[in-house]
Length: 284
Ligand code: GUN
Image 1: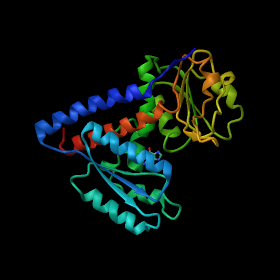
Image 2: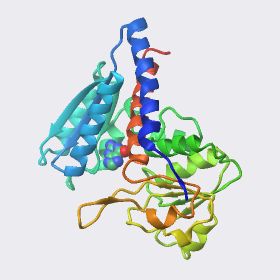
Image 3: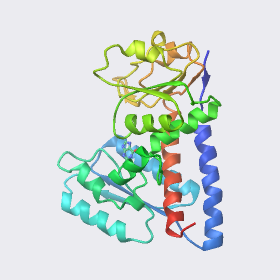
């Protein structure tokens, strides 16, 4: 039976360390650190994520500035707000919650966030830096996954790592982080011919496709580390991941639950990036 990786506990530890550092920075340099969170429209899942991000700011000692804009906000209005936040010294990090309403162009919005305040690491400059292993900001979800793998004590170097999903937010940067740690990385996606065969080779499997319970116990290797980035809502309202937990926990050595696995880590890494942005500002 697999050991459960407790994302809440690991993220609490990360946030505690950040809180200590924030308190020291306040004392030594008298600075306050701020994260601007922009949400457009009424997506209920986004509302929950934004509330959790604000709570995390409070817990580590950051100021959070929420900009909740109506659904009908225009592209120009949103870009004007981003310009204002880019120029605001109180704002160290800017996060625009995705997805945006259909009439807004996410790419243009992200391109307009100053790379120095892009705590999601979505700006092309920061994406490029991830590619070459020169991290200003860590991509939050993949970085959280790396912390969870580290918490198991399992070495990545030389291991077969399979990432299921090729999104810009998770799959692609995840693969890069595993590669930087010298994993042998395979990226699977909807056109992969034999997903089960690819997964079966994995010592470390990361699922990030948004398909409920796609990965079954008979698709994974005995003793694999299984990380589930999925967060799917079933018809009965329950949350589930991309991994079929019941069958996989019988085969894996370590497995993350949903909820309580990767989710809390993403927010902890966002806090880490905001601290990094503030420290860069005062050249620490
Ligand atoms: N929507 C879902 N995940 C994320 C994330 O990590 N950052 C932002 N900005 N929006 C998201």
